[in-house]
Length: 338
Ligand code: NAD
Ligand code: UFG
Image (tube, rainbow, N blue to C red):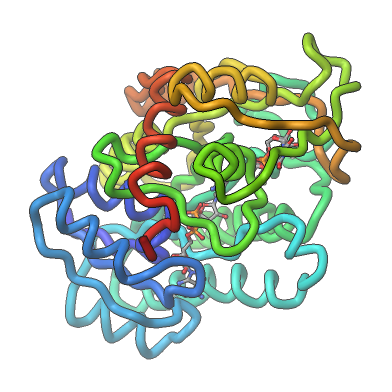
């Protein structure tokens, strides 16, 4: 299959590109590099051993996306192109709604014009909201989100479901990621956040490499076994493998299907710090700070549906995640700039 990766130069998109290529597919990347760099595309080529078609374009640009699809007819679209920083979305809600909703609408319009029927969408566990009990199961209703980023995911899921309901040809797969961490085992590709990292693992890795003085753990008074929040951390290579399954699944199904991509096992912030120290051999200085607004105490995935219907399970361990994150950070202390 030939697959258009919208936002394919980003963290999850770049790892997915490699896995799709190695599974025998062709990829076409469209990215405006607002949160990534063309260097990531070069690394995809280096790691996969194949040259890759990549366009610098805004996925909201209808004419640009349609003309790319005309030049490179595709069988499926994977939509990664979104703004994703929770805190920033609270400060810049209009930019988040504009970017995330418009990219989705433009892709759907261009797909209709170009006769493309299959789309895989990067959704998030955040759409389960604050009230659902965990582990989260796909049959639960979407819940109230605590920030505009989450609401964009909620709305985009709704838009895609409505589009599939109105068009019997359409196949939509909504992938709800839990907490992706880790990097390609080669150390050549990984997460490269701009500025101060919002997420735990890149922050831990930057403390370990000496770019930050210490980690602040947001709260140690949660009703969890060690008082720190628990999440379902998943290796980005497992996530990438899940996309290969999802893309292939769209070719044989119609309508909308939702899949959680998680391990099904929760892990605390302190457990991450300890596992990172063990696997890197480097101490990670931390202190406890107040809770972060909007954080839930804990949640994790019920990942049975992806196992049963996609034939996918997360194979990599917490040690793999920490070792590969450190390998990437150590070899690329300033990310793709290094
Ligand atoms: P990322 O920022 O590394 O990748 C997103 C890519 O999309 C970037 O390369 C960015 O430049 C590009 N992009 C954004 N807006 C664009 C536009 N208008 N036109 C063209 N390109 C555009 O993020 P990621 O971690 O790889 O996440 C990919 C997707 O998965 C996002 O939609 C994100 O919301 C979702 N997601 C991520 C996580 C996570 O923890 N990383 C969790 C759940 C869901
Ligand atoms: N944490 C710290 N210190 C930090 C950063 C994070 O203690 O410097 C803690 C958080 O409080 C949380 C855990 O580490 O308990 C994980 O935090 P992340 O920011 O890495 O991840 P979140 O679970 O908050 O957010 C992730 C994705 C979002 C998504 C959300 C819900 O980044 O895109 O899960 O699914 F919306």
